[in-house]
Length: 203
Image (cartoon, rainbow, N blue to C red; front, side, top):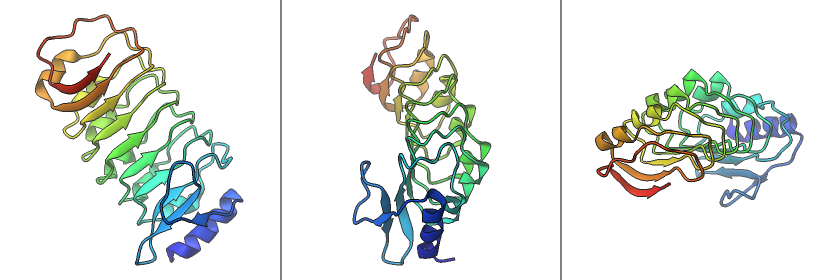
């Protein structure tokens, strides 16, 4: 099925007209098409999905960027693996508590924005995402599981501001190269070693 037909199907499922945009930005709802007629970017934030994923999304096999924040979503379906070319997933301001195992099949996924959800632990599937460079878990309820982030072979930018952390596995930072680590507005009490390998560190 052509992507143009899939967009028509999607518009029926969300009961909203989507505009074709020259450039997708965080405040504009719509989609972007490349020279081959393939939809590469889609923004349907705050479209009143009420926790339901439109199934047409998973047919967009050329999708590289998906913004679906602010839709009261409680999970990410296993079908997310169908979006094999996805590079950026912005799913902030929802009700997520966990991630599907199929997330690790997104071999091109580089940036994962999950701020303002209901995570209490860092999902261990994160360490199996082979290309993930940035993860944003700002404003959740995380208390542990941070070691999964530092066991990742690709993560460079980690944002954990405004959670409920009381400790962090700083000793693991000796063995990885992190560009930016934000732990502000937590209650971390354990000692920070002097030789941590972080370029930009905020606590």
